[in-house]
Image 1 (cartoon, rainbow, N blue to C red):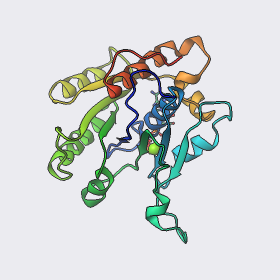
Image 2 (tube, rainbow, N blue to C red; image 1 turned 90 degrees about the vertical axis):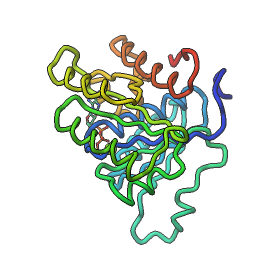
Image 3 (cartoon, rainbow, N blue to C red; image 1 turned 45 degrees about the vertical axis):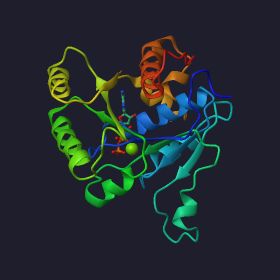
Image 4 (cartoon, rainbow, N blue to C red; image 1 turned 180 degrees about the vertical axis):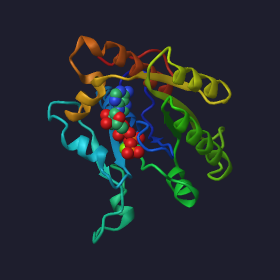
Length: 231
Ligand SMILES: Nc1ncnc2c1ncn2[C@@H]1O[C@H](COP(=O)(O)OP(=O)(O)OP(=O)(O)O)[C@@H](O)[C@H]1O
Ligand SMILES: [Mg+2]
């Protein structure tokens, strides 16, 4: 059963940025496990041929909240049709879509077709800020995303407050008209949880309370409702 206040209609949430290594898979796996934990029927789709999200899912313990996985990248020599490969289980309430770095042009347009929400992780470095600025321009000019139809939001990842690079990121974000829904701190908890096939909010560790709070904030914004308790 879904937690109180959740809309159980299918929502597609795509995690995307042209930049590699900014935390797309980290955000996708943490978000998918957060939804599964809230008893929403969740499917994690991995469009990246590196298959990191699927690798994470295979490591997931059997007693953790279960979610469905789809390896959505083209499989060589597969006899299964692409549309069958991509078919969501009918009962899916949240589809979390992990994407490869470097999508531009038609690839970008294709990837974003039918998505309800676009979630962009960004790192506090000048190279990442520069690439993300170009990517956001492409979202609106090339993929023709219309904010009335598709929500666009940002998650700042690997934050180290009071650093010059963080201040640079803050300046960049202030200039955009896109909501920043959470700041994820840089912590080994992400590495530890990912190796176990868990979300950072599923670690039974006192050191992860700050990370749990950040994920509650993400879910609350996406669900557009009052605070939800994940743990
Ligand atoms: N907040 C964080 N704190 C510490 N380590 C992090 C954090 N976020 C991500 N990482 C680590 O950074 C690395 C890159 O993250 P991730 O794989 O999520 O990026 P990505 O955008 O999916 O990369 P790619 O473009 O290769 O698909 C991973 O090893 C991940 O564990
Ligand atoms: Mg990835």
